[in-house]
Length: 255
Image (cartoon, rainbow, N blue to C red; front, top):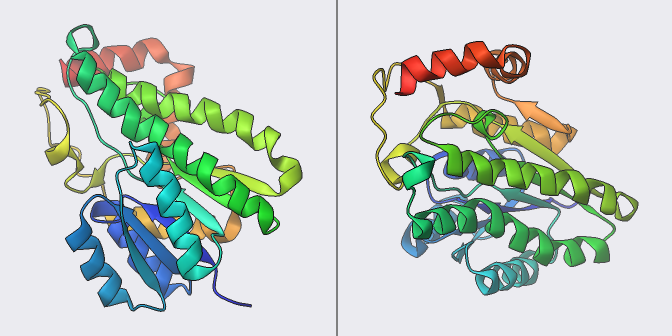
């Protein structure tokens, strides 16, 4: 069998970079998509021209998304897996969130994945199907104070995928969603706004490499939903079972 091709967004740093390396090590080819052209090209060079190509693009721009899909298809001949990993955070109270900041968060976290799915579905249909993995967050399932707009974008993507899964089942296009918890990356250094929780920094989180390994496993096993740690799974379950208690804990931690 020929190697499968993964179109991976947010590939320039953090989870995306770690995933790119691990996908290649697992025998996949990767089309690397992110805004940083220099970073992407250096990574693609390290991974080798037969294994990776760099696609500098902004996922918030629909035209960039469609062009990136066509470039990846032209380079590798096919896209078997789309991993929507790119994201940006916004921290601060929802009632004072600047409209332009909210629009940016929705553009990257919701519209970007939507554009890429719209662009890649016809490519997958033409080749008998494919897999789409969306990287959400445990706080897409239970919103936290000071991150409501980011959480809303992730939740919106989850509901969109629920519908698309049914709509495209007959086309053999499958969907998986990953819900990571706290991850040790520079994500918080690039958020819009700055949170000031009383106990910020006490949760160490898992490495980007561990999340990346979960993504590779998802590409192989295709679960409907996946978590990185048992704590992440229990957090989501507990948030539904005892929401009032979770509200109280969040109030103590974040405010």
